[in-house]
Length: 111
Length: 116
Image (cartoon, rainbow over all chains, first blue to last red; front, side):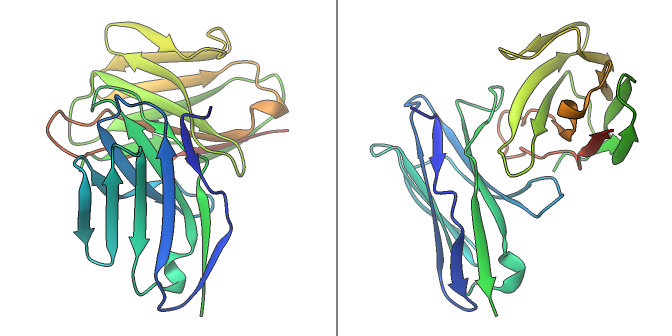
């Protein structure tokens, strides 16, 4: 079983729609959960992090965590073409532990 | 967040040569640095962790003699790809560990290595 799983996509949504990205993880000891956005040829940039069950909102982004189901998601409201990128889910057991990444979901927002 | 620079940002070399990649922490001191490799359309894979003042810790399957990692100071970690071959062509990225109470899990800008 893969440690962090994501649907590779591509996920295609129209401009202005809500994009929903999902991630499951296998390590029940995971404490921290991160969403990164990576444009082609660039390094990943941190979008959101979440530690506690429930929702966390930051602008157009909402991260949702359900530790019982070992599931974390990212919602992007009012999607823009500039949101088109690969979104990586990452988890770790704490800040001094290594981050384990999923393979990423390619999101395309169509104008 | 923590600022990290990498040099060079890209490099093209001939097969058999060695390439050194530098990762510098610009506004903080890092006793540890994580090194990742990313092949096209693949996810990031942790290669090793450099430790200031001690040997690097390598992930399973990573050749220690091929990927030399050195943590020379609290602001500099280096990855040297020795006797590079085309299959070593990849995107190499460093990342400092997050601080205990913050969310800082930022990556360096990466180095694109192409081996001809």
